[in-house]
Image 1 (cartoon, rainbow, N blue to C red):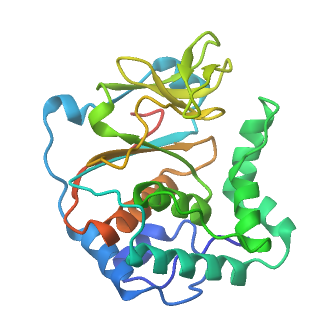
Image 2: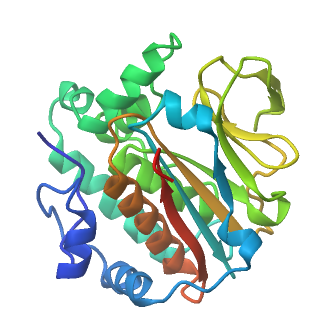
Length: 277
């Protein structure tokens, strides 16, 4: 079964990403390799007791989704310019690698993560939106959208690993977070500005003020990443069947992308949660 390309790595990086790798397609820019090595060797900055318990996992979520995993990545001292040449090069490499790897549109539907997300979305009569996004880049010649580097860093890894991710300005988040299962009466303002009621049974993450994201309806507007963001939080929803290691390496990939533009960023927290958390 094919997976998405990650390029040649050191032994440490290779072990970290082995869950999704099947083959190195092309040598990535050396700055990306160095950034990923640095991210692995750099120690995590100790946080306060309040921040260490950043995410509380509800008993309802553990019961409903015993085989699921959710990851969080918190980085500070980041920047969010409109574009940066280092990231532009990596985007071009990723686009070329994806197009070289996949020749038949039907292949994408049989990727392990895609199948898992499609099964989850089907329960809510929805389809996984990352699939058509990947199809547009691979088979329609579309480029990865240029938004701002923090969002693009996340979206690149979504295309590479096909894991659903949301990004937030950490300064706008009211800790602690809670991972839970929707009862169907929770409401929040989506990133589009529209009010949304959650689907019963859907996974969602909320802070002490309101819902921040859900799988089916995406991130909120209140904590969205802004041009002025200097502290960022990424959350990854690994639906049932997505392994802990896959979520961790996905977060490491996002971190490496961010460091291409902000090499002095501080890794404040990286953690994967499951039913045993």
